[in-house]
Amino acid sequence: MPTESHASITAWLTASWKRLVIVSASAGAGFALMLAIIAGAVVLHSSHPRPPQPWNVSAIKATYDALKAEDDDGHLVFYYVLENTTDSDYRLQESPAATIMGRLKEENSLTADSDEAGH
Image 1 (cartoon, rainbow, N blue to C red):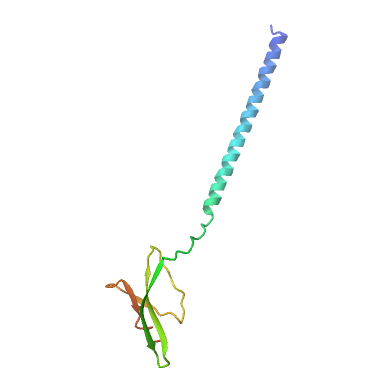
Image 2: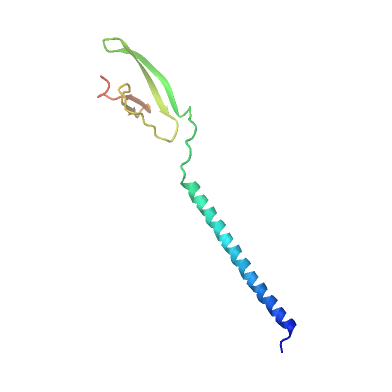
């Protein structure tokens, strides 16, 4: 026959069990929320573009080649050999002041394109 102390122990065990379930569920929910926040931060951080690297002053090496007077009006034209010392490709914007060049395989340098040389 259940006694009063037995009933109080049962009530205490039931309350302890409920408390354990509530604390465990809260801890699990908190852990899941923190995991979702961390995963979201990692995804957000990885999707941002990287800032550009500082300008590499030794990426393009220019070596003086020649100075010639061209045209009848005596304009001076400076010729330089440009060497790309990186693994990246560089492109120049089109400009009337720039001459299109071609690659010389023997010297690994550039020469004026025949279509553009007489501008």
